[in-house]
Image (tube, rainbow, N blue to C red; front, side, top):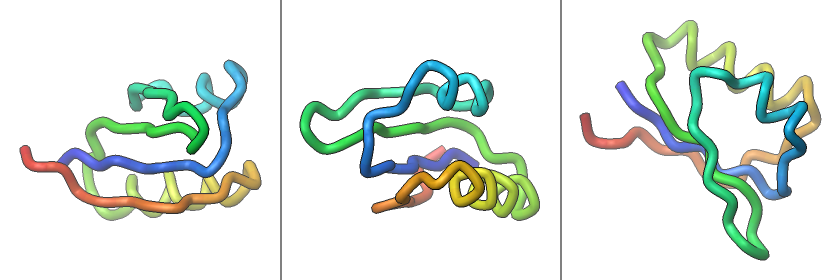
Amino acid sequence: MRYEFVIAARLSDTVVAAFPELKVSERPGTGTTLFGPVTDRAHLDGLLAQFSDLGLELVDMHRLPD
Protein backbone atom coordinates (compact mmCIF):
# COMPACT_ATOMS: atom_id res chain seq x y z
CA MET A 1 0.00 0.00 0.00
CA ARG A 2 1.07 3.56 -0.68
CA TYR A 3 -0.42 6.65 0.94
CA GLU A 4 -0.26 10.40 0.48
CA PHE A 5 -0.51 12.75 3.47
CA VAL A 6 -1.00 16.50 3.07
CA ILE A 7 0.22 18.61 5.98
CA ALA A 8 -0.99 22.22 6.35
CA ALA A 9 2.47 23.68 6.99
CA ARG A 10 5.91 23.64 5.49
CA LEU A 11 8.05 21.13 7.39
CA SER A 12 11.52 21.69 8.77
CA ASP A 13 14.34 19.31 7.86
CA THR A 14 14.17 17.95 11.41
CA VAL A 15 10.49 17.01 11.07
CA VAL A 16 11.03 15.53 7.61
CA ALA A 17 13.81 13.36 9.07
CA ALA A 18 11.24 11.84 11.45
CA PHE A 19 9.63 10.14 8.44
CA PRO A 20 12.51 8.43 6.60
CA GLU A 21 10.19 6.01 4.79
CA LEU A 22 8.27 8.85 3.12
CA LYS A 23 9.20 11.14 0.25
CA VAL A 24 8.48 14.87 0.53
CA SER A 25 7.01 17.35 -1.92
CA GLU A 26 6.59 21.02 -0.98
CA ARG A 27 3.31 22.60 -2.03
CA PRO A 28 3.95 26.33 -2.44
CA GLY A 29 1.50 28.28 -0.32
CA THR A 30 -0.40 25.17 0.80
CA GLY A 31 1.96 23.02 2.85
CA THR A 32 3.79 19.76 2.38
CA THR A 33 2.91 16.39 0.88
CA LEU A 34 4.47 13.22 2.27
CA PHE A 35 4.00 10.00 0.33
CA GLY A 36 5.28 6.47 0.28
CA PRO A 37 4.76 2.88 1.36
CA VAL A 38 2.68 1.96 4.38
CA THR A 39 3.11 -1.68 5.32
CA ASP A 40 -0.09 -2.30 7.29
CA ARG A 41 -2.76 -0.73 9.50
CA ALA A 42 -0.43 -0.57 12.51
CA HIS A 43 2.13 1.37 10.45
CA LEU A 44 -0.60 3.77 9.25
CA ASP A 45 -1.83 4.30 12.82
CA GLY A 46 1.75 4.93 13.93
CA LEU A 47 2.28 7.58 11.25
CA LEU A 48 -0.98 9.31 12.18
CA ALA A 49 0.02 9.29 15.85
CA GLN A 50 3.44 10.69 14.97
CA PHE A 51 1.83 13.55 12.98
CA SER A 52 -0.35 14.32 15.98
CA ASP A 53 2.53 14.08 18.47
CA LEU A 54 4.51 16.58 16.39
CA GLY A 55 1.54 18.96 16.26
CA LEU A 56 1.16 18.64 12.49
CA GLU A 57 -2.21 19.48 10.95
CA LEU A 58 -3.15 16.69 8.53
CA VAL A 59 -5.52 18.20 5.95
CA ASP A 60 -5.82 15.25 3.55
CA MET A 61 -4.86 11.61 3.38
CA HIS A 62 -5.58 8.99 0.80
CA ARG A 63 -4.37 5.67 -0.49
CA LEU A 64 -2.51 5.80 -3.78
CA PRO A 65 -2.84 3.19 -6.51
CA ASP A 66 -0.21 0.46 -6.22
